[in-house]
Amino acid sequence: MPSMPKSKYGGETKNSKNWLANPEDEKLYNSRRWRNFRLSYLKKHPVCAKCTQPAKYLDHIKPISQGGEIWDLRNLQSLCPSCNGRKTRLQ
Image (tube, rainbow, N blue to C red; front, side):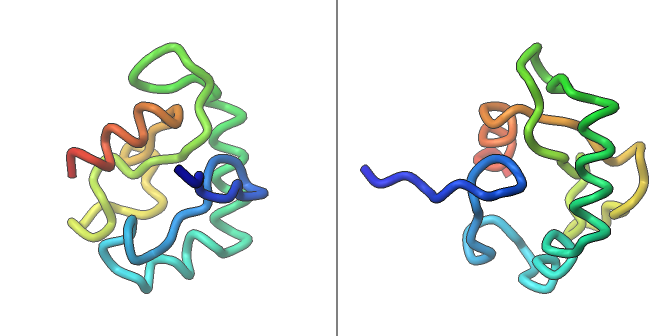
């Protein structure tokens, strides 16, 4: 089974058709501001919020598409690939 290509920002690249509820949000995630913010957050919170693995993703606890605040630190958590995938599948 072919795997997804790796992103230079960590983890797998994602296609907006299968992971973003609103394709307009892709502009945010590709912005320099978001990438710098994400890296800074992950440096301060390097461990997954759900387990003890190294975090690779910055996740919105309440998705933006459901009214979650983009830049609110209370709405963010670091997740490892496994926990991020699990959360994505459950939504």
